[in-house]
Image (cartoon, rainbow, N blue to C red; front, side, top):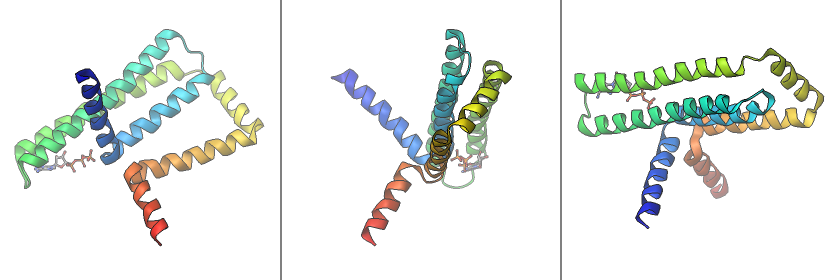
Length: 160
Ligand SMILES: Nc1ncnc2c1ncn2[C@@H]1O[C@H](COP(=O)(O)OP(=O)(O)OP(=O)(O)O)[C@@H](O)[C@H]1O
């Protein structure tokens, strides 16, 4: 039961970060597209392991960055030089992970034949192209508004 509760708390922390941090939503959407599009590429177990690690590192860094921001905002409402450097370093940690995640992505997905395959797949299947376009629109709305923003908009529309 205690184990179940600790999972619940951890999940609550992740949900908070997704709801409140636009960058976390960008990482989430990017990770989903990476995993879906990986189906077009030659992927070994090692390639998947590298991608899993890169995604986990970026998301964990964003979670810790949010922790640092929340603690800083709680301890200093006005300008504080320590807060500034703490927040800058936390943001730096995310940047380091994101840059190396892109490097991992280039190493794993640099397969020109697969790019052609993706192009041919979508140009020969208009329905899949439409699904991709719809998913892109949904992703952009999700990134900009977040789950709570979307829920509030739906509520407001219903009340009108
Ligand atoms: N209380 C403060 N005192 C000094 N500098 C601050 C303070 N709050 C923010 N800063 C500076 O402004 C930058 C941006 O801070 P902010 O809290 O807006 O984070 P952010 O990068 O916009 O975070 P996110 O977009 O991930 O929510 C920080 O990196 C820091 O340099």
